[in-house]
Length: 461
Image (tube, rainbow, N blue to C red; front, top):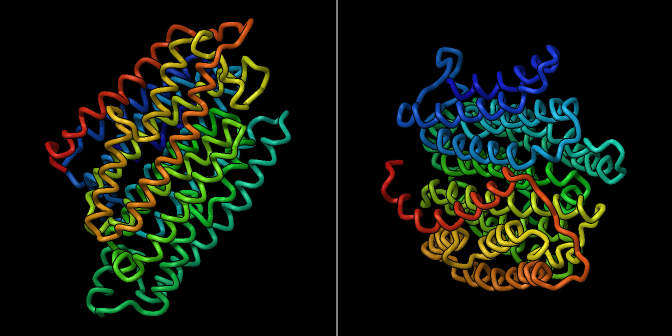
């Protein structure tokens, strides 16, 4: 219960500090709140707490919810720390920090729901602040356009999700996941309303996680949004969406995975092929990273496809290691583009190895990790997913995963080569000492997580 209280009160405390003209302490309050959220997850591990059980058992903080909440809190902590310098003023910072905090609250709800009503509320609490954050650069037309696109298409996806929930309620007479599971098990087959409702929910989730053919919004929104907000969407929002999706399809909607495995496999394969092929043609680095994010969503969808037999710890590992690499890449892109007067092309990275060696090294490691090169954690993340998909008998999908990973190596190398390409009269890109330490920390984490992957088998889940 502490987790939902901390996450919900954090945004209110930020707004209160703003009203009381205590903007200088907001950053410290945010970091302290996220540290408390992570600490409470560790303290409550194994308790399976159900807040307000007498009110209908709407949430459950089991090990699944606590593990995802811990990852979300850690990634959020890193996001706030790495993007601190990107906010122009204390006034703007408090507003955006409050919106991000409320979105994190929605993320916590999304991974801990035990009732479909709470799933919908979690999606909306997560999404609505992000719509505003995407359009937060008021002077930028593309930012306003990105916010509008995200809001409009997000509303459509929410409509699909809500309609699907309504149909499942019509088929089972309850929103409670346990009751729905019991009724479907007792009947022995899925009613027509249940099937249609499940497919609509899948479509709603497919938009939120940006997998084909529901991915078309991602490149435009990612490119138009402020880079630090793009990093938030590519990491925290995606982590929460996959956590909520895995919880639903590993329990209540698990019959869908058995009967419609081909649908999931085709969506996964299509996502990997489309995202990686189109990414090779990109010259805008932010758009390239957007398609990279769609590609990794394909891998994580493969984990959801195997939810009935694959342990959630492997998805958590993938989400965590991808979030670290993606956050590093987007933060560096923000620093480079600001120094280059808003230039986000791959050419803007030329000469980065001399202009800021620490940043160039961190970005190189993060891109190689996303490509799945050992000894970096991205390799182990992809290995876990591929091995589980192979055990499920989807050999053709494994081949696509391997081949598209090779294609991805091409466009990641394009950025790496640009960083090591000499550039005459290039000025240094200066960042603070704290920012340099964060780049070093992220690099160390990507290596350490590779060697620490064995801990997944040691920790009691």
